[in-house]
Length: 246
Length: 243
Image 1: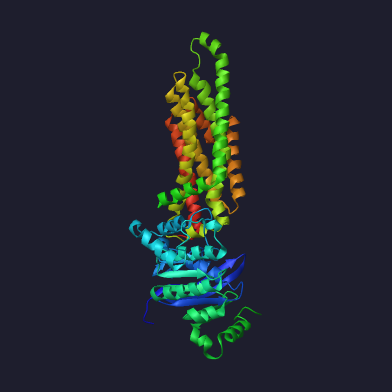
Image 2 (image 1 turned 90 degrees about the horizontal axis):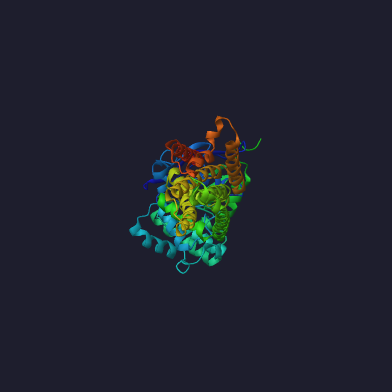
């Protein structure tokens, strides 16, 4: 691979109440790559992404972002990350502009660049007219867009999006997909979804999780090679994960 | 970074209608007590005038008022501190802070100073009210300042204690009750007779209440505040998996 690795996870495992939710997940993300994380409900997608973003500590294994270990050098590693969790972390009593400015400051955006970054993020997420509105009064789709804007406002090299298109209408979904493609040119994006054609359209590579284990990790072309992507997915997930059954 | 967080915290407090209600209610209670104490004082003033070294207006009115404010704040502060961390966890906004490239110290101190700014406003409003004594008599501003300092240190201590409880749970109510229970427990220690009395913040407030500023009390408050802040920082650090 020519392009450098921006995010790598090594043998991530997370236990929850004595049961492992994510087992031995390793993955790598290169610059300018869009990676799709697929899997059924409860396959461990969100848990994996939270560990990658440093929101959750892995029981074992480690994460490196831009060559910084997230447990040892959290400030440096997290400065390279933008994260949209499953529930957008928005303060409903704040105005969109105030909130995004706060998020930018948290990520050490310089005061001189604040306005430019704010305007760019709003324009990218279609929020240009909503700057003065209270987040609590926005619809679910707009709140989701504020969540995405929060993740990209500081223009991080790695963007992690947990189900970015949930709650959006078809036009918005198309816009967000274009945005993700655009982000994929300059930074690396990892997103989770259960919409297969989303992966087909925008992702260069796909990782499929099944019961917390990686059962597929290759290019989307490979996933498409034998048959269409949907039947490949069903075929793969129908097979029991290795070692998961007796 | 601490300033950014503190400003945001202050903003959040002041856009909530409940904060304004609490401020208004507090001013009302305080004014009520102030007038009641004033009334009492005016009634016994004639007898006091015949005594040799009669207590002045400041010690008869301002000092008891400061004690009342101290108790009200003890019960009120857990309601503010529960929002700082526990409620952010429940609203799932905590993740924004925990994935940001800032240290646990920044988060904890930012939230602490934000709340402290707001408590200072409450205390300053009361200080202004008490200073109105000067309109009618010779107020002892030294004693008033001692009392205000005492109340402020007490408030800062309860805020640090409450913040620690807020960091332990994701249930705001649990955080508030925990902090309140410990504050009450410490207050009860004041009634006991043994050496454990020195552990109670209110015991150290009593000296300031009569206008005595002693280094030992100041050190006690400093240790109390710094101790709980350090515990909170450590708790947040561990949660974020920092080594």
